[in-house]
Length: 329
Image (cartoon, rainbow, N blue to C red; front, side, top):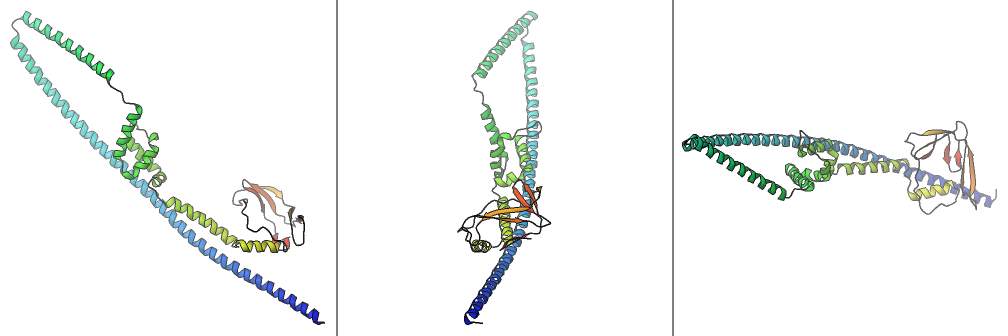
C-alpha cells in the first residue's frame, strides 16, 4: 500500500470520526433541549391548573357576592315598602279623623244658624252654588297647570332610574351596570336593581372582567405558553439547527437564510379519509442539482392514508420515515 493511499484512508477515517462526534453532540443537545422543554411544560401545566382553580373560586365568589347583594337589596326594599305603607295608613287615618271633626263642626254651626226652613234652604243652596263654582275654578286651574307643566322625556326618566340603581349598588358593580343598563328592565315582581343583580349573578365572568380580574388573562397566557412548550418539546431544534438539518437532508444544498413559519394542518381535528397515498412528488434541489428537480417516492405496503379536515391535508399511518437520503419505508 502506497503512502498516498494510507493518507487518503487516514483522512477519510478522521472525517468519519468527526461526523460521528458531531452527530453524538447533536443528539446530546437534542436530549438536553427535550428535557428542558419537558420540565417547562410540567411547570406550566401545574401553573395552569392552579390558575384555573383560582378562576373557578373567583367565579364562585362573584356569584356569592352578587347573590348576597341581591338579597340585601330585596330586604331593604321590603323594609322601605313596609315603612311607606305604614306611614300612608297613619296619614290616611289622621286625615279621616280631621275630616270627621270638620264635618261635625260644620253641622253644629249650620244647625245654630238655621232660623227657619226657608232661610236654611236658601243658605244651603247658596253654599252649594259657591262650592260648585269653587270646584269648577279649581278644576280649570288644575287643567291649566297640567298643560303648562313640562313633561319629562323617556331619557330623563331612564336617567333618574339609572341613578337610583347606582345608588343601590356597591361601587364594584357600577361599571358593569353602566355597560349593560339598557338591557336591564324592571319586572312585575322585581326592581331594576334586583334585575341587574340577578344578571350579575348569572354572568360572573362579566362581573370579574368589570372589576379588572386578571385570572382569565393569566389562563390564556399560560395556555399559550403550554402550547409553545409542547411544540418545543416535540421539535426542540433552534433556527440554526433547522438550517443545518435542511442542508444535510438536501445533500449540501443550502436553504433560505432564516426559518419560515407556515400554517400546517391540525391532526387533532376529526378528519375525512380520501384514500391510500400511493406516491408523493416534491420539487427541490439536492446535492449537485443546478435546477429544481422532481423527486418521487412510491410508498410500500401498508401505505399511509391521505385525509383532510378544515385545516388542510393530513398524511396518516404507513411505515415510512424521513432520513437524510429521503423518504424510506
